[in-house]
Amino acid sequence: MTATTTNSTAVKRRFRWIKLVKPIVFLVCLLPLISIIAAAANNSLGPNPVEALLHDCGEWGLRFMLITLSVTPLQMIFKWRMIANFRRMFGLYAFFYAVLHLAVWLVLDQGLDLSAAFSEIVEKKYITVGIIVILGMLPLTLTSNRWAIRKMGTRWKSLHRWIYPLSVLAILHFLWQVRANDILEPAAYLAFLTMLLVWRFVRMVKN
Image 1 (cartoon, one colour):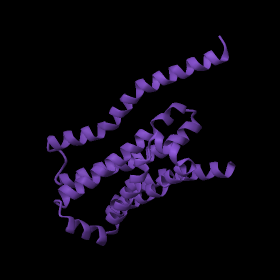
Image 2 (cartoon, helix red, strand yellow; image 1 turned 90 degrees about the vertical axis):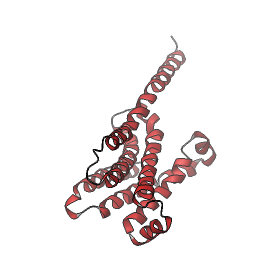
Image 3 (spheres, one colour; image 1 turned 180 degrees about the horizontal axis):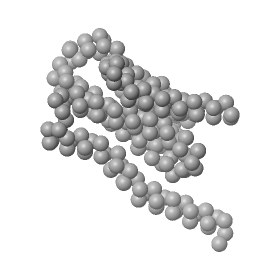
């Protein structure tokens, strides 16, 4: 068997593996939403269901942002090359849960009162930052396809590096709205993001 034939066989196996696993990963990423819907249907969201919905959707949006940022370190440190095939899916799910977070706030919390919602955005800095994050994620989502990658060239990478400052802002959005005795969770996310940023900085210096 020649080296070309061996490589071709390996590529085919890799493609089949990805084709098999992708739907499974897609469904796993949907599990948080299914859990949230089930909790709402069973009236088990607690005394303030709207607040619980806001928290859960927003937190899963943040988690998927951090998962997306973790793909490259996992790929390079542990040689998990296959995980790169799921980066786009994780990023799209981050935007999906962020939009759900916004929709719950706008529809259930604000009752679709756009005037009141605008006042909240202007007056409360954590809401202002949250809106900035979602608006910032929009161009990243719209360009998460092969056509955009080919069309934009090197500009694509420059645009998608905005996920780092957007992640910082997302954590600030979380941190600014919690009580002083509830900062442990956003602080943990901030520590994790800091580790990712330090890893990226070290890698840039070495290169």
